[in-house]
Length: 456
Image 1 (tube, one colour):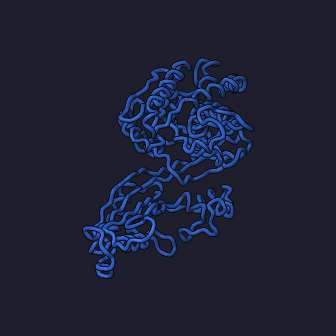
Image 2: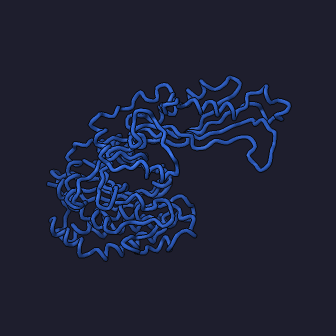
Image 3: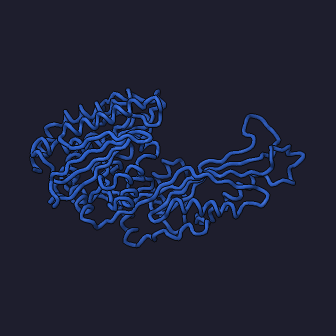
């Protein structure tokens, strides 16, 4: 089964690429209402593709937002594991269009890279699984494992329909392990296994002082300025060592063990390049942790925006009635985003001057995830990545979020193996998004080998 599938994949590289280009030509931009018909067409395209591969129950499931596509093939037998394949078929908007070197919805190959919106995030990586399933079904007529697929159309807008769908379809989505290809490798020759993701808590703070904007000559010096109050409150949220001062913020943080710190230290990281890329001449963060640990394995609190009063051209001597700020916290596993939002809200209200009123609006939240490094599914992933890339994979914590990983843990009780084949310079969410084609083909080989290995 293995050799036949690998040979088929090798001989059908051109047809896989052609079909991927067709997939990328569908402008499935989830954020823009004018693309809603394109989203529907893309979902239907996937369902028809899965049916043509011989999968069962391929469906376009309506949601309050964009549809979720599901399919399955469960004939490997009860003694074989069931793998839940997740991906997303929606993409980011293409603006600014003038910075693209080719049509973002007409995929073009240049120097081993495939350029198109969604090429790497996530249509190109998700399509790897269609190629894998075809390689098995066209040679052996069966798969080495049972599979279930779920592809959403709202990942780029926060995935509001996904968690309720998974909750209401628990039995349909029951599996032993999930696989996700929506992360990246460190280099074309250096594979990576992400085993932890951070969650997110995002709030907006509104400070109200006087009932209206006041003349600073008549009232200044006698009224607590809301911008001053907000600035003092925000400045107090961290101490000089970069430690977050909100009571209870760290209570559920799992400390980094020395063994894990050694694992993280193995990943290539150049602090000078990091500073150069950020355009700064120094780093600053929580004392006692390396920069790598700070951006991946520790919780954060950042002020994302602040505004209030007069900000137009010229001058206006006003004492403003209101001031605003947006605050986000990246959270590590075990931290609950609802609990953190409540702790932060209570603390801000407690430290506010008594003459101002504080209102908190929760904007977004999601849980982090920590995946076992010693599971049989993770060990198998390590083995096949080393076979394909001739290099042992590096274990990484991801500083960002893939909320579905935590949802699978919480709702379905399964871990996710993140087999990412993108690269750090794929221009995700930017003009000239691209996917390194050797990684696309290596990804197909990796997943073929992985399914055979875990099916043994």
